[in-house]
Amino acid sequence: MVLELLRKLSDAHGLSGREQNIREIIKEEIAPYVDEIRTDSMGNLIAVKKGGNFKVMLAAHMDEIGCMVQYIDDRGFIRFVTIGGWFTPALYAQRVILHGTKGPVTGVLGGKPPHMMSDEDRKKTLKPEDLFIDIGVTSAKEAAELGIEIGCPITIDRELRELAGSRITGKAFDDRVGVAMIIETLKQLETEHTVYAVFTVQEEVGLKGAKTSAYAINPDCAIAIDVTIPGDHPGIEKKDASIEMGQGPVIILVSASGRGLLSDQTMVRWLRSTADASGIPYQIEVGTGGNTDATIIHLEQGGIPSVPFSIPARYIHSPVEVVDMQDIRDGIRILSAALKTQP
Image (tube, rainbow, N blue to C red; front, top):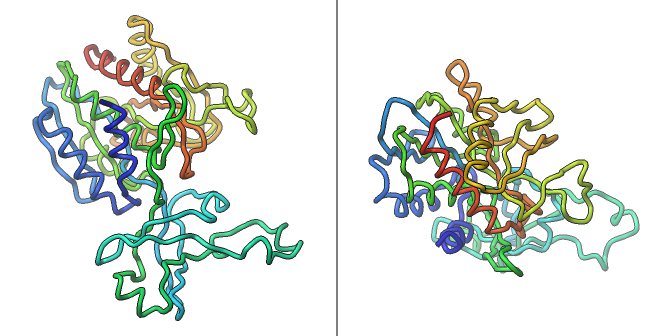
């Protein structure tokens, strides 16, 4: 069941560069359905379903945004740096998990209480250095005894919950949604091609795992499965983000106003014609912001025809991302059907 798989992936923790927990879950899920599983020197998990000479790369990143311990003061309060693209107000007053050398430790992100803020304080933009983590100790020594040290990874403590209808909320849907979709596609895969399912590392800090894995594999084409921003809620205009949740997965033609990726037209036609022939709903996006692994994959080995295939997700890069399960199911259907044919 896709929902329970996504719950397992979303609730698990895997900061950029520390994706091992996610990697182990994926291995267990896909082992019966592929011919080969390996981990490269960057930490990318590469699964191969062997077929003909035509090589298709499916990519989704395992990592999530989070933080890392930078300093522990004499009273045991922890200063940190952010890893990945946080909007700082989304961090304030969150509960977090510090992944220490002796196991997970719960903490809370604190800051100056609103009651103690001056008018000038209230006008200032909140920055990560204005916050700290409280794990309940009273000294740096106590923190060390719990296994907390400089460099300790930190992730949000949040679990998936179901909303009304087919919508769900949780952390790290960016991009555990894509990971779940590739896993489910592998489980029902019927293709004559050789398929490389690549679960990449460090996407949130520069698309790094996709770059090295695409170079090594040198596929004939690639699809990067990720999430994208809909314009169907207050605070954003449809002219800036025309897609909607519940109306199908998204084939992206342009990312970051063309500074990122101009999708390969053959790849776009492949996905569109597949969806049209199968009667599966989908949406088209020309985006002004955000990139996916496809942005870097398409530049490798002299050029790899690539396209991003995304799921609308509200409030991305927050602890309360929201997606529609029907969009995910339709996305899996399109991927599975497309892989029966050739671009």
